[in-house]
Length: 498
Image 1: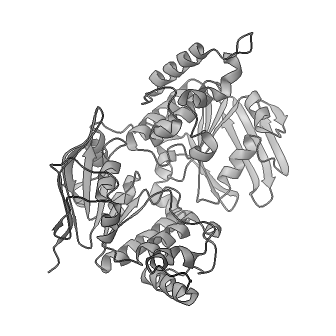
Image 2: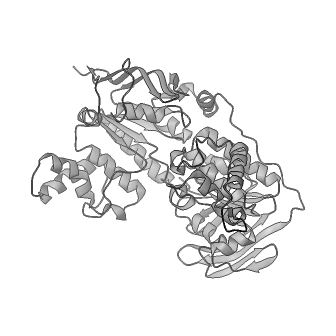
Image 3: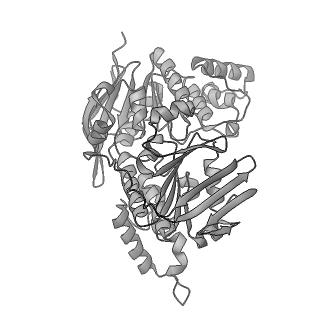
């Protein structure tokens, strides 16, 4: 007879050199349950998932029971055979293969056949997609799909084996609200089939939407297990961090604040059309809207990387026509991109190289040599100012958490001391503590006179941290409002942002 609990982890301990990643953690997932695991970076979430999926081994006094059976020597192969599948934020698909080939890949490999039964492959793939109620062209290459569709292909692939627990690690980081809702419908279908879901997300509002139980970790310890009804946003943040979230609005602008940027009727074919707005000195201007609304394309035009077809950009009362980001940087524009891993950082290079790359020439002496002492001094200064958690300056930047990586991107631009700083999704994929510190920093910079354009899909983020907000859709500005004029629910309903 099947047990009520699909997963029972008892007294889970994990020691790394100098770090107790998990300390006596008990963790239970019931059959057919959606269970959320939350905690800031370094809380032990990733370690717990790695142990459950057999990637890491716990200390000998730990016990893992899967579907009623004690598993003392769990590894990746055994974990998958037990019905556990993990879908990470970085998907493990073959982009050059078709949807059907990706979904049925494991089934075909298990048969050890020298020949591919294409008809059977299509049958396996179609059945898996039907199980989650999704219609995707089987012979389309995965690289041609949206991120949301690729995730659904990953889920369908997991269904080609006997699936008991699906672990979703930050599955919504790059999805629109509509795509998130579609994913949640798929999760509901899986639960109806008795499949359990372990859901990990930094977006706390999603926890309340999807979870039946929430386990909170902090510093390797289990703080508790709660139903969403026992929690609210503030209580959840406090349990995760042992601190209160900064919800202070930015300091009001002076009535006579100078206009530093004036955009008039800016248009770029297939990107955006007839964009007009002003930005004042020391102002935080929010831009929100669905993905694909033209927000990033507009930001790139202001940074000299996507020249507009027509219209005017007036910077400090002078019309400018930047044709490269170098020209924009020289004028005093900084840009933190949405995709920090591919466009904001050189992931394999040292932290110290990443943080000094925008000001590298200032560390070159008369002999043409880099003065590493001065670079290290700057790194330590920014480390202290931004509370960056890191080991060695020579360590690759990819070894840092998402929040600390984002602080490195911010730091390299702060040393340029830009007059305008454009932030495209500045807190995407980072934990609540890092998000809180970045929001505080943004307000401090504005108080010091820096003008900031904050682009975010999270309406709550722009409402809390901006003086004014623009809503974009289909390449146009729909409206401009102040944070206290409309609630988040009113915005979602009035402007169809869900």
